[in-house]
Length: 417
Image: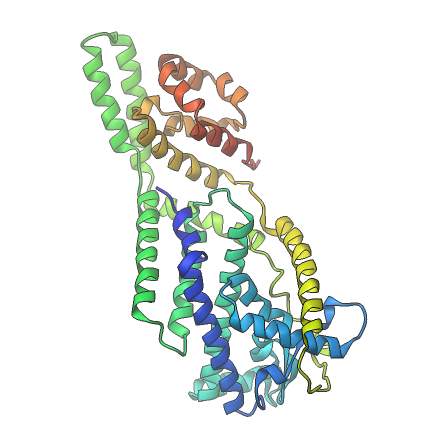
């Protein structure tokens, strides 16, 4: 079981390239819309500038020169992170002045004579301009979130197997495709659909997983062993222990599992970087206007700008590391990672459930007793007792790369009171 692999596939490799193409086509469609409804005149590259907050001095010519270069890079790249740089650009719209495209709906609505009420009225009446603007606004929101996932993928390599996290990204990917003004080629959609199906199968396997079958296998094996070497008292103790585990697993309803997944969602706000799309500025800041300068950047300008971009990129990556490189886990996430390791241990070492160091009873002991390192793990009475009975098998797991990963997960858990 591995959700991490499939959500990352959406923001890397050939799928990333497909999404970039869809996003770039969406930007072009928006500018066509803006020209059709008299919000923009001419080519957007003639009405673009870099956002002023990047510099201390007020050098409007440089903002425009660098804006032209960055816009060209955004529209020619095949990288999601670069596409996200569209949020660093402002365009001069005839109707609302200099604005970022993802702010267009908000400012446009504020400038209507009747404000939001007028916007709602026009929307309810089926106004085509408003209908299109709503779709573009939703499209831009999905772009923002997909770019954030791409940045998380680039800066965080620890596995993240949260169902909610993965399903949210999947929703944004399909929302992007469904809102695209240009049909996506069937063969490209097919690969995205295939990955989504694999991801959903992983989610279902994890969310619907119980250790009933594992425990039944353990019961059967213990009974067989009892005829040869296990005493009646030991057998009775094991059966009581496993029966209690089975009953507890059966009593866990799917609603409780969904509740556990929902607990993950509040963490998404903290994990997703706010860098690319900062909050909308105050109205007096949003009313900036500028003079157009009709010139093209020369080679010297571009080299200077690329140097500046590299420098700012280093600063951005440093900040993103602070914002999104959190490898800490809550208890729900930790139990999920340990469950996935349980399967990995079984597949690698062919161990029985009671020999598996990530088995359900061990996970319960870890969470309940807040075990966070190997020393505490061996100090737990129940874990140590079962370890002594299965020492050879468990030692092979503990001393492996998977074992190192297992204890690293314990160190990342944040406990709640």
